[in-house]
Image 1 (cartoon, rainbow, N blue to C red):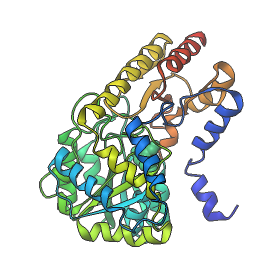
Image 2: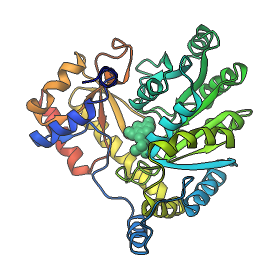
Image 3: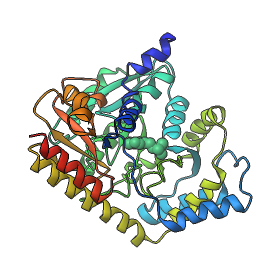
Length: 379
Ligand SMILES: Cc1ncc(COP(=O)(O)O)c(C=O)c1O
């Protein structure tokens, strides 16, 4: 394998594909990768079918189809009082992150990444020729230490260009508090940094409140806000995402995006517009359904003698297995027919959470019940 590709594999990005393949091969219950085993809301699926039949099957305009762009402007205004100058539709939030980091960072720049982190962040920083500067969130609370953040930026001696924020946060399930986000805002403003914020779980908050960093004073003009339909509407395979914010930041992402994939997913962009226009009650019911699944799996993990850290948002629970989590996960499919991910794969510092395992709970109640039964039988 060429050296550069091998370097990306070294980041641990292949574990999800490997674990999902293992689950398929062994028939294990896949609590590894975060995707629901139920379909999205019927009106959203029907909107996709209608768009396909209406001939919406050619390239979309580079910035995205007008109906979806409008729906996003409206969503940001109605949910958060935000008035972004521009919106760009991307191939999932993942392409928005890649485009933003590559469009905004030069080789030699540094990007603050809170670890544990979604695996594409460090890969995207590497694509840009930049370097991650990690700030570690430690279990069990995974709180942000403002002093550690400040020290990281200062250690960068002017090389830090951006801070990559994720709230609600994968893999910890934390919803960052306003005070933590204010600490990020203070540092961004003081050091003139761009804030790239990944909010794909914005509608999956079970306790507390989702605060978009762009809503904090002085932040709208330096924040690129990223989200997508995958998690909020249980359509992770659609890969319709977006970024919004100041025109110059969106333009930087657009410049890269046009050469990555140009523009596509036209019928799904129309359906994503329909999704964003669903009544709030529909989003709340999806969230409440997921909260019940969280509680069910937390109970199952506790009954199995594992100690779950109850998440305030997202699809994920971390539990302490009190032994080497990587080894525990490696043999879990054969021991009890379950696939789960050692939380350490999301850390650069492999010693930060060596005994934690991440379980996805976005599964049907009967699947969670069976998983809990198998875990309890482990003894
Ligand atoms: C934090 C975070 N950001 C982005 C993504 C991917 O979003 P999308 O499927 O829209 O590319 C995920 C998926 O797991 C995620 O956990």
